[in-house]
Length: 295
Image (cartoon, rainbow, N blue to C red; front, side, top):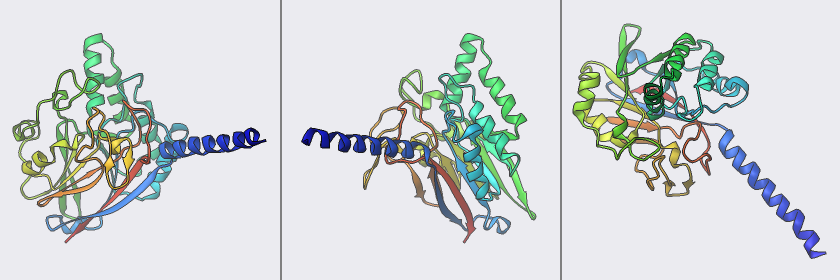
């Protein structure tokens, strides 16, 4: 009798565990915050940005309709994506293109590149394939704007801010699944060479996939940095935060959330998909809504 009673309990526990893991990897959490700055132009006070990252080919509903519906519900003025829209393994970026099609021009969308897009580019060069070129063409055709070491000026009621998209080199990352050799630290000179000096009379938002170099981004002159790459630490523990980075370093210093150095602030999204480690624990996928506030 006891053995018969144990089986339903074990089955129930396993069922709850499966449900818990499914929810933790598929139920999107909307995070909301205000970012305040005295350098923000008056016309952008209350400006609403949706920040997403690290989709890695994942779909939330057919054609990413559920994700698009959630983003539209936030009524954003701007959508910014901080890289790894595509997965470097067996992915053509179709899930991100489907998302853009579902968003259907609700607001401007600007994207920067992560390490996975660069890995795809390198593979294309080595094998003669055209996966990234096709993805880029589809992205632009679906209404996305790619900032590959470029900037764009956004104007509003006579005021303006700049959005920069930084593409760091693969050698600025570490790990066999990320770069082909151990990473070298990013220097301010690299940003100056790729992006030029920041505008001194503008509020500067920098899309930079890797949050590791927050101090360099600050020294360059970014007011707000939007990053990802760490996937929230993959496994999150109470009071300790994220456990791993994608290159399997333990307890990365910038795993998720808002950080501040001097007058610069950086938000690190937990992202939406998975790559090296194909699951999340206590770490739901994230869509972030940032409201800019002039102090």
